[in-house]
Length: 349
Ligand code: AMP
Ligand code: MG
Picture 1 (cartoon, rainbow, N blue to C red):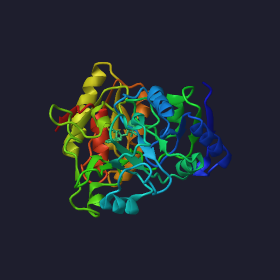
Picture 2 (cartoon, helix red, strand yellow; picture 1 turned 45 degrees about the vertical axis):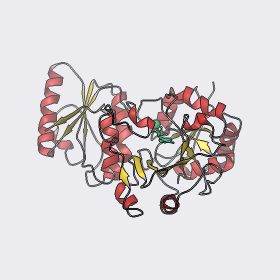
Picture 3 (cartoon, rainbow, N blue to C red; picture 1 turned 45 degrees about the horizontal axis):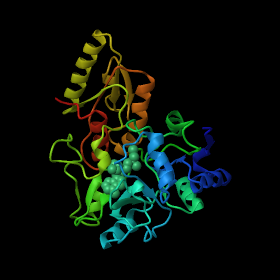
Picture 4 (cartoon, protein in one colour; picture 1 turned 120 degrees about the vertical axis):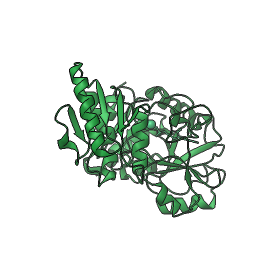
């Protein structure tokens, strides 16, 4: 298939391109588009055949439901009920990097919700995303625009890498400013429960309802009896091609351990990548070193994380060693993605 690609400078909307892409959505095709979290791969959420194509293009497991993207807070057609606490959360955080789970209405096909009676809905803040949804006049189901299992794309070049030739249209804008996928909050339970951490943090949500908590299965290695409630969180995810190991503990000990491991790998003829930070970068004498940004700006670290994993793919390293981050604020989302990327291979120091 020929994929049409339109790239817009700094999210300056090219209305003609958006109109063409919206027509693709209306006609049952697939469009990759920028959002503030990561790039999305969209189809008409109410058209089961169109949604099926998303699963095929990504190689996504059939039991992993899609998030529906909307351009207004009026979601009553898509859901059975909007609990009061969800109203308050939407009022405060929409548009933005936050998905809410509701009981779904009958117009949402089971293909979209992967057989569940519930549905995840989000109103993105990215202007191109919103214009696309508005112009298509349908809600857009959109998972991240990557081949399943790979790190989510935060730059249009990565969507092109994964999806060129497989979908009808790729709309490009600037890099995703958040860089990790939306926070997911299940509003079908009381108190609401965070199923996936993101840029809207536990602390921010507690300001709305202090009883909100994180699903305990989210940060742990999947094990029997403790199953994440978001079906997608059980898969190996966000994974670079090379194995990734997290070194976790006091930062001085972390640097020493990483340097010791790097030496061993180099002695064994291996090419090693190091995920460092601005504060630690200079303490690694060898290896392919990339900084995620400053430890004093974890928003930046989140924004750079997936792209750095993909750069290590380009560099064809044999192994990647990463520093870890404090599990507080957006650090919870960073560590959630890093641990999944590493398949929970964590070395304590
Ligand atoms: P992605 O769009 O690729 O970021 O993946 C969507 C994530 O949302 C996956 O982890 C899904 O399991 C989760 N999700 C979507 N819909 C629901 C739902 N109805 N209930 C629980 N989790 C959901
Ligand atoms: Mg994804």
